Image (cartoon, rainbow, N blue to C red; front, side, top):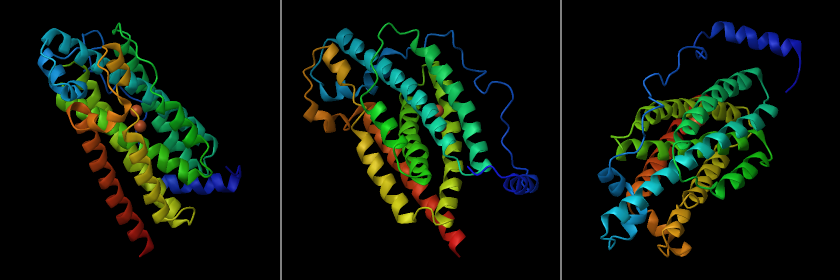
Length: 287
Ligand SMILES: [Fe+2]
Ligand SMILES: [Fe+2]
């Protein structure tokens, strides 16, 4: 970022004419989330949500099935926590390459949200006996985003692709587990992630209008990113834990049922919505 007093003054003038500021400090948005309550959903919901059980319908021992389904639930909440940590770290890397104060303000606002998300999921996973390991894709994603050659590319991968995947995870959990106390927090966090994306669309459309990246390049990055990520968060670890003999070549089949199917559908439709909005914004700026 250029440290120029004139640039700062110009930006502050712009800020003064734009009163649509986000309110960063206030009461906790998760006041109605009870961190002390047991987040375990009822058995029926757990079994219906399990992608592993959708692939193994022959498992007739109900208590064994419920154990697998519960571990799968724990696994995805653990991965949610790791994704939130990843989001937080990605923002810090973007802060280092921020090219304007406006962009930096946006990063700051999101950092506050992501720090709260980390705290919420940390409190939930601390209740589970089963601690899953970090999915392999998470350090890979961090590496890919931080080593991206430009700020616009980092922003597309970090804001639009990663957030779309997160929206799928939260949205599917809300649908499958209405009996879980976690649903209250998931719902609020989903609203915040959607807000992050709408701010990201503004930032990315500005990059396009400033000629820092083309719209076609953005679209390619978004398509490639989602395709790559969809297969990376499979609960292989849970399958191994229960000796289900799941072959890694069966990964695609896990997307055919349960929570993974719904999550992928939500991510894709979220991505399509973002693409439409981005095209509209860029079109409007070009005209
Ligand atoms: Fe988040
Ligand atoms: Fe976010």
